[in-house]
Image (cartoon, rainbow over all chains, first blue to last red; front, side):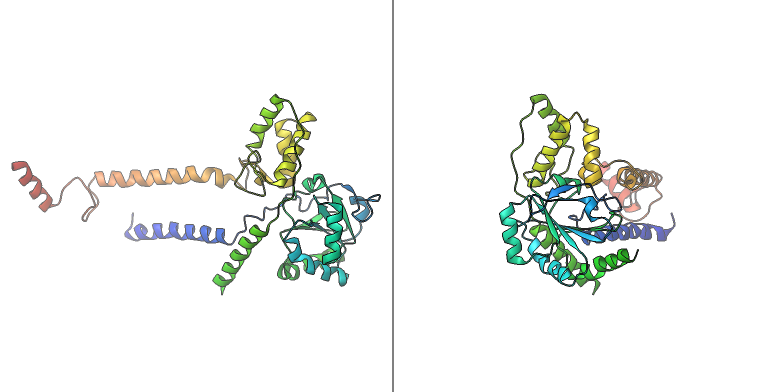
Length: 178
Length: 160
């Protein structure tokens, strides 16, 4: 082996190792990519939170771009993103539907009265059965769904102002035009 | 600047994981001991997505309870283990499986350690051979021919 390789080879291996370790630092292991992106919204039929005798189904929401936001009154980090959702609703940017996950009806309504209700409607998933079909594993989670009822994006954890401006709003605009 | 951003992202990720909430849970419906045993084994091969380093069998998280109940429901409906895994995989992705499937995006994961072992073995062989031939020079470099002063010492020691 030529002399230089004796030094270059370990250095090269070291550089590759550093690259992967450094990349690993900036990854969030909580963000598990969803296999549901670019797949149709799972079928659901759930009672509305405010009117339990009425049901909302996936088919009812076709023909528009909409957000599905998974929330619960027990979920602390849902409060972090809630002002942003209120802002979206106030400016009529996109209709938001709430999936009230494993909650009590009275707790959920009290929570909305306290923090504001940005949802066109919330549907009550008391036993978490529908949440499993959506691959939900922690609240809050937000799905962006297009006019054909295809999931285009899944945001895990509270929405930040940055991710809203950089990723979510541009996607919504694009989907609205298509 | 880059580093500051990365640190910020990291702190943000840690905070998010702390803030990540768990849902309240309900008790499981009773089933036969044989099925219980079968599901216990199945659940040790599935990952809980809330506390990611635990299996579904060990996890106390609310979501794990829901998934265990769902798995029981599927098993009672006559689904096989493979069908149940498939059901979860289409919803939660490969991450839910403790043993990732071999496919184009994971072959490095499966083959990588063996490839590294092979490379290490080849390098080791080369080094050993070379030293055996005495090709390496310098102190501590080995080689079968001792340096002159070493040879001198050895001879002295043997003479004593």
